[in-house]
Image (cartoon, rainbow, N blue to C red):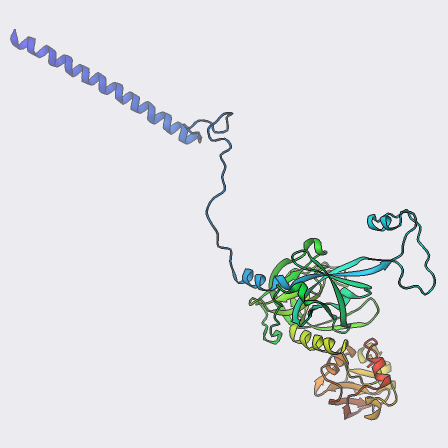
Length: 435
């Protein structure tokens, strides 16, 4: 009896433990099942954070992680950017009747044009005609000098320079050179006393593929001090164009893919050291076959720039030698003309034909004649009038050059001393067919 009484409670406790374990196992199984369900369905057990009144609503924050954005490019830009300016070309407009000065300010087109007395060139207000870019490169005494493109200041009746801080300063034209598309302006140095002038680098040391940075005011001063970057795409590109006055522009240019747009003209092309290695001048936007082009811009090499601006500061113009001839490209003539008139050997297919020789000029004194075909200058081949002009302009008045030419089938050489008399001085300002 005692043994039976003692065994009954043990059975009861054993049953209770099994019951509790079973319940706990069921709870754990349910939790696991629910968790797996939410994981598979992509749901979350967290409250819906997008619901109205959620504690996390409106708590977006800016990361406090600091990024070091300094680089060789930013350091180069910081060095030269204060010296970069916008150049504003001011030209006269006809005064208006009606609202008078107010119509000029607001561009009212309803007023009638005021006819000015014949010979009165001072009438009319100066208005902004165009904008370009420039860079301050020297401060000396009371004067600071700015270099820009000739086509930026072409036709100007007045000039202003817009500084980086928004200050407008009156500028005066020192001199221009249409052939290289360069111009020098001057402003009062006390207006830019806190600006360090830009430094010129050696463009002859440039390599294709190295970084290039263009600064300026694309589309005008609204986007002043814009920066674009790329690389030096190529060197020694022969770029020939004409000014609005029909004068030839010939640049032995730097090619770059740094974005250059209208308004960038005259601004600096900078190397990674923050030195000016070129003055931005032009770009190709479309080929003759109407193919659109991107990333082909050109700059005047700094070594050429320094040579020209030194002369412009001193004389207001660049004095170049001239041969005193008019000329045509041999390749422009028909084979019949080459054989029957020039009578040059069949092997001579490129060169420059002398169309006329002016009296008392270096060409005349050297014995050159009409129909002579020039093929070399100082041993360098010249195939076109542009190349002849370029080689000629690498020399100074007083230099002696050796010209190789054909007279019929006879190959000859002549020593020519370069000088400028009244006739050749006049010709040096003409297009490339007069040299």
